[in-house]
Image (cartoon, rainbow, N blue to C red):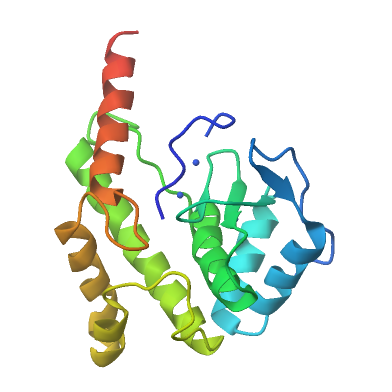
Length: 206
């Protein structure tokens, strides 16, 4: 998941809470659907790893859920989770678990100090993506997402064939090998590197 880089609002890499998910204004082309959002959050609660991702993100506050047509569901810097409305409940919940991990843990891709260069920042962001994708794959399996999935990851079969301790590294290797994207995957490496360079260049002109 590439944190949405297009400017919808100022755009970012959110368990059990009883209140209705935060309802902020969704960007153009997306709409809030509290009932469906609550259903996805409840689905996450069926799996401990999903419940943890949900709870940690919602505890930070400011999360909103927006449904519309988007090739790869993403999350903006303002905390709007943009969900492809065509996804079924199980597949959408697994994806939301991935996105909420980024909200809970943060995913900084702008230089924050003299010791941070864009290569290091991009590597750190890709490692976070590999971890979140590994969670998503685990949730997909737990929720029974199968051949009818709208998004099919090329590495999903290899992921489950690999020893448990090697799976996240396998995903990371795949992301490094596909900097400009792949089926179900945004242009993560190239996108994060570009965003970092742009932020660095903008800072240098101030």
